[in-house]
Image (tube, rainbow, N blue to C red; front, side, top):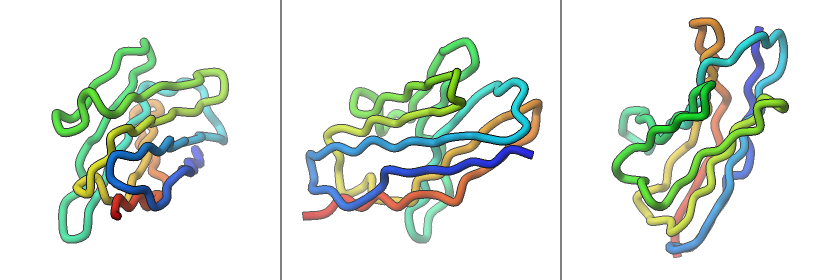
Amino acid sequence: QVHVVESGGGLVQPGGSLRLSCAASGSIYRIAAMSWYRQAPGKQRDLVSVIFSDGSTNYADSVKGRFTISRDAAKNTVYLQMNSLKPEDTAVYYCKVDHFGNFYWGQGTQVTVSS
C-alpha cells in the first residue's frame, strides 16, 4: 500500500507564487511517475504536470512557463512550483503516484488565487 500526502496549498493573490509538495510513503519499490492534477468546482479533474522515473516532464498548455515540477527521488517526493498564479488556477490540487501500474491519490490541497 502507498500513502500519498499533499501540502502547501493556500490563498495567494494573482501574480503570486506557491509551492506544493507531495510525499509518498509505504511499501514503495519503484515509482513510475508522479503527477499533479487539479479540479475546479463543477469541472473535471485535469492533468497539470507529470514527472517520470527518468526525470522527463510534461505540462498542460495552460501552465507551461509558469509551473515547474521537480522531485526528490530519494524521498519519494514531488514538488510543484507555481508562479504567476491566475484566478483560473484556483482548484483543489491532487497528487497521483503510479506504482507498478497501480494509482494512488492524495486527499488534495486547496489553492485559491484571489485578490
